[in-house]
Image 1 (cartoon, rainbow, N blue to C red):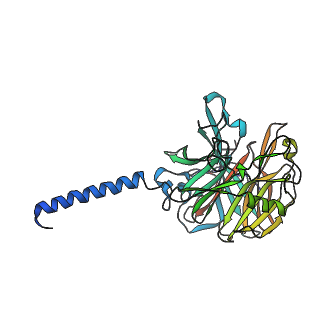
Image 2 (cartoon, rainbow, N blue to C red):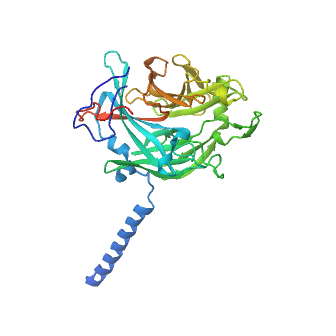
Image 3 (cartoon, rainbow, N blue to C red):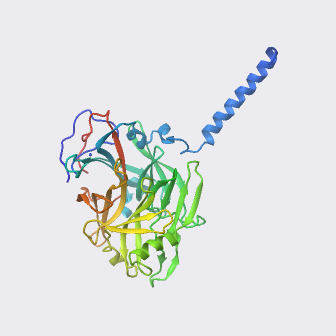
Length: 401
């Protein structure tokens, strides 16, 4: 359920929530001192220019990462969490009155669990516009995932292949590009259509939607969107063709080529030691732009690390135009409960809609699909525990966009 609550005064300053929806001799010593000073200077320079951005436990904290401002120390409140959503507005991302500028919406919210019933509610909060001039062929800031990686709040652009960090300095948020990732094996002049991101074994893993590119006759042109990219804590990038892995998933649900499955949400679970996929669309038929809008999915795929065993489950009813676009495990649930986004796009009506829901991996619905006000398509979500020391977890300010 969604909750209406007026904003309190003096609330916390992190992304806030609004509206409805939670030797010997003096000479020798001097020489040694000079060498010591030189060594220290060299080490400092190396630390500044060589040490990787994400090495250690929270590089983002030094630059005012939005994630750092939320991720305070525990213990944490057991039944309420901060949430951030990020939008992919497609062509609507272009800002006509700002020249070559592109926009995404960062939306704050609160997720709350009733201790008695174990049901969840969501309360929408403040929304912030984020801008960047980076684009590919006049498209940009079409952000499709959000992840707090080692203290840095990262998001990915499915047009340019840019991995951005969202920074907050003096109360203002801005975009800082960290990586530009071409599609496929990386030797191409086209940004990767990044759709999902997760952390596995300490590294950031990002992926595309897992479907081959076909021509109008349905013939395969390339499989560049089947690759995944791993970025380790030192910034080293590696790539892997996941065509076999994606095809394994398709086989399990009857979507073998020319059928298809489109992935916009996937995560590795340390608690389960498994992959979890919530496909956006599943079809046993050849891809068609118009029909594709109605291939929404309610499927949960739980997969072992080697993709040898795929457990297929379902949650709720299929709404043919609704498909999963992002999810995160709710902290403290052993990765058994997820909060997820489902999005809808109707090309004929030029409309975008997003829904939020909560459920267990066994398919028990703890929050039915609820529409998020505003008419935005949110494709990224991150969740943050709230420190028990923070007294005010209510809506901070603003109103619905």
